[in-house]
Image (cartoon, rainbow, N blue to C red; front, top):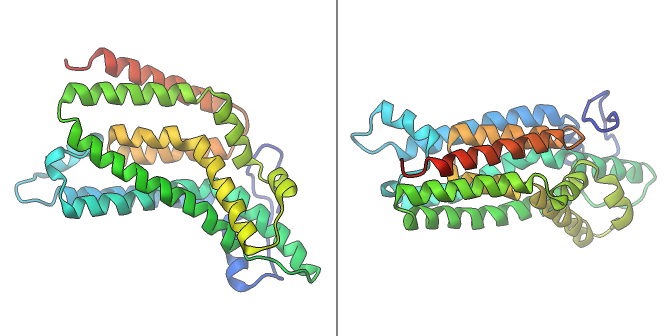
Length: 279
């Protein structure tokens, strides 16, 4: 299989006949990034509904109240031991589900290189190691995000303060969409081969480090959009699915137009929210 320049168009299948079954399966799975993206959006939405069900399961909560909770952050009085634990777990699941499509080019490229090396009888490190390094970065970020989510919910009890913070986060995320750092990291995520060519490793520790570095590049690309979840509420179904679609489209195409359009939309949304804060 090959991708057309600047796209993620799938043209044929990889067999990975020289890799172990688990490694070959991982490579074949990530050879279909669009299918992964669609599946992740479905999983994310399902996790959001599960979280919503747990939060709104208290006696007296109506169906209408549950539906209204879809488009706002988690209310302060719903924070208890169980929902805090669920929040941390959901952030971790959300991070992995949202970023799996981003990992597709990296893991597929590594699996292709490993297949070529295995065909020549050379020793290789399983692609599962590089995937573990990548996932570790996002699981670490999810713990930070969950902590910040809980702190914001407890500290910002005034609606006006929450609205202003949300506006600032939206504007900040929108401005970041135009930054050089954003696009440098995005290019690394979309085109991992030059990175592998310059930093190739043949030990498990070295390959794990490659996964961590690629994870940091993707974190540099997407952290601002992830922080938007702090403003709108972790596991907010509508925003969560929408942001997953946005980040997936960003990774599966070339150019900056889409990223800039998202930036403009976030800035406009933040300005409007700031203008009407407290009204």
